[in-house]
Image (cartoon, rainbow, N blue to C red; front, side, top):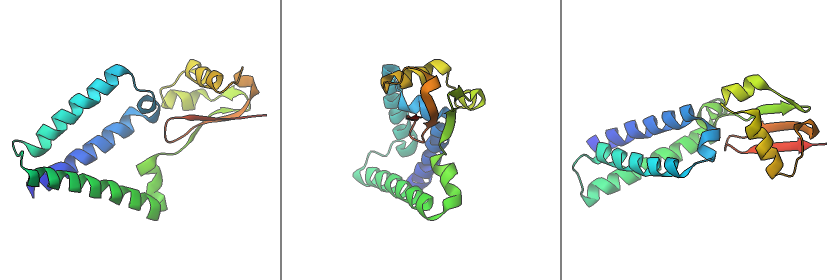
Length: 145
């Protein structure tokens, strides 16, 4: 039972950390970030299982993580009020060609980040953008016209 409690704690900790880090940072990972994820994974494993390297222990941890993941997805689907807390909300960062600085600042983004994304989508200038939305997955959606 100790493994279940440890797994729940680590799941909630990882959930809180990923929400705090921000969606934009998670969608554009650098090689250092990937290495850090591997190190975090090893540290989490050690913290959850301690010295329990049994097949039963591993199965318990994996099943608990899977159940928690399915449960949060189910909660998000069934309880509309929890959806913003569990998944986040899209954020408008450009409206009628004007950058919304306050929203960029909250998301720890720069105008250059938005311009780079626009160029990747063949948009020459933010003046051509009707609106741009930072989606919950960290990608930016643009509407022109």
